Amino acid sequence: MNTTLSSEQINFYRTSGYIVIEDFLNEAELEHWRQVVTQAIKERNGLKIPGKEIRLGEDDGINEDAKYFNNVFDQLLNLWQTNEEVKQLMVDERIGKMAAELAGVAGIRIWHDQALVKRPWANPTSWHLDTPFWSFSDRRALSIWVALDDATLENGCLFFISGSHKRTTFENTGIGKNMGGIFEVYPEFKQTKSHAAVMKAGSCSFHNGLTIHGAHANMTPGFRRAMTCAYMPDGNTYNGTPNILPDEYVKTLQIGDVLDNDEQMPLIYKLR
Image 1 (cartoon, rainbow, N blue to C red):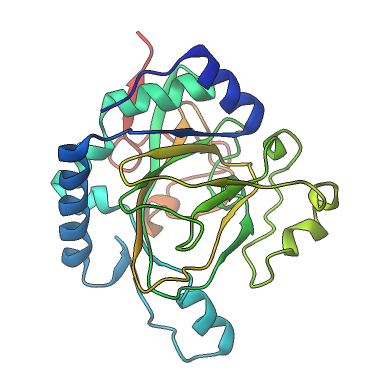
Image 2: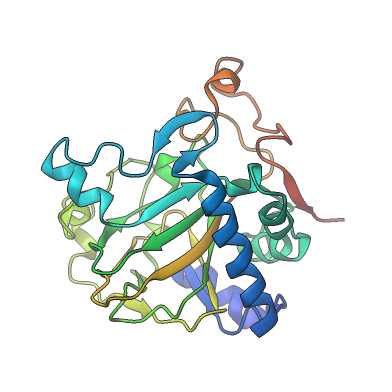
């Protein structure tokens, strides 16, 4: 696993709000990740997230918007909570250290993982931000995105608007059907050139949770699979948005409480 970051890479990430790491996994590691994630998805049997009875496609047919969004990608969250092998991948201290170095923080907790599967002919993922959906507000929060298949211009690779993380806010603009919808909130980026993150399988990217990003439609008969994990800098507090937190846990929280439940958001790296 390629987990050593150069000062140039760290500086690029902090300036641009994203970085692509080529050959993050070697061939054997990639095959292991594929097998583990595939098995974990199978075990879920369509359940999107532990503790919430929401299943893939269950609202399909309710309205046209539901049909559209159900064909953007299959999204299964917190596989680490239901599969021990995924957990071992996600709690790897080496990856936590990468996230901490990029973010410039002393400690990193898992916020949630996600398997994101664009099926053949899937719709695009519109421009959006991540952090405004989450239960904490930190400009340093970030995610890793590991390509389990080649991510190409044809099958739905990510795109980033470089430097946008320095000017976006915690206002939740949502994810709509209109690709340009986010520019109604951030018109200053409407004329900005986007950057495609084409990646071969086994490579990865990191991006800041306030970086504007999206993905192409899948214009191929094949799958575009990715395994991702969102990270929360240690020491963050609850902002009142439940997001992925279990209902029973939310009932114990008040705004301003420290989010340090190791069973829900394990600390995977701490600077010694």
